[in-house]
Image 1 (cartoon, rainbow, N blue to C red):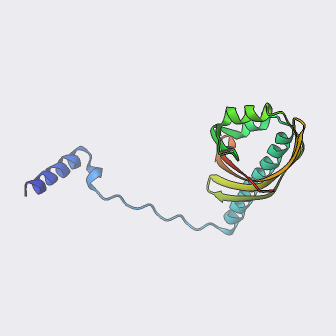
Image 2: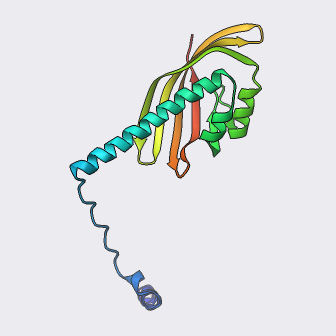
Image 3: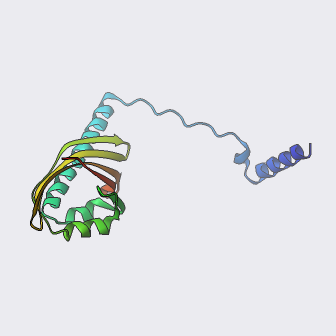
Length: 169
C-alpha cells in the first residue's frame, strides 16, 4: 500500500511540473499516399542516387589502379573504418596512406557486378574487384568481393565502412 501511495505522489508531482508527462502521447498521423507524379519523382531521385554510387565505385577503382588517394579523401567519412582481407582494421588515414605507399603497380583494376541496396539515407554496395599487377618483381592476379556502406548527408555520399574478402584462386 505504501508503494502505491508513493507512486501516486510521484505521478502527481510530475504532472504538476510538466502536465504533458502524465498525458498519453498521440501517435503520428500516417503519411498520405504519394501521387503518381510524386512517385515518379521519388523513383527518379532513387535512381540518380544509385547511379551516383555506381559511378563512385568505378572512379575509386580507377584511383586504386593509379594509387592516388584524392577521391578517397573526398568520399571516405572521417569515421571510416575498413577491413582488409587479412582482417586488419584501418581508419581513413591508414587506408589511404597504405594504398599510396604500397609499391603495387596495377596494370588493371576493375569494379564490376556492382549492386546497390538503398535504405533511406544509407546504402550498401557490393561489387567484385578484379586486379592485375606487380608488387616488387612478383606478378599477381586477384579478385575480391567488397562491401561498402555509405551514408547520404549534406556533403553527398560518404563511405563509412568497407570490408574486402579475397576470393580463392
